[in-house]
Image (cartoon, rainbow, N blue to C red; front, side, top):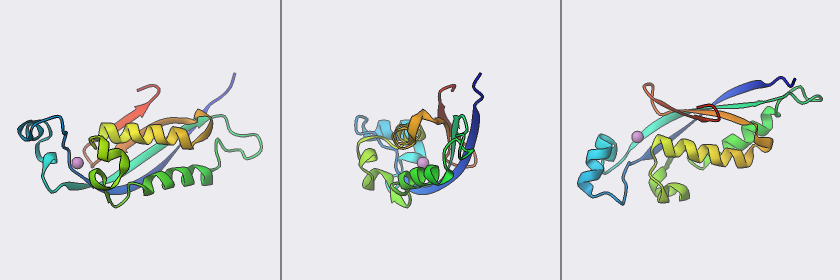
Length: 138
Ligand code: NI
């Protein structure tokens, strides 16, 4: 039987956004998103817990070289860090930047950048009070 091991690393990025859906009226946007619909936006210091799972490589003793994982994640997060998501990042010009959509974006992008489907779980902290999770057993 193969024995899996998981490894989790914490990363962070900061970004501004405004929750607004073009399919809703202004009134409906305010009703759905409340203060997160504030015209001039607001910001978050996001924390991202990335978990990979697999068998350690026989030669390196690691599931994936941590340098490779750090480089994949940091490259992706640098596309979001210190940005106004809805105004500056191509994906969120087209999609509402809720935590649910941000974590799906991270999941899809990291699956392209971390090989062999090792990505297992992501936890996205939006504040000290709330987080989102995505993964195969959520
Ligand atoms: Ni927000």
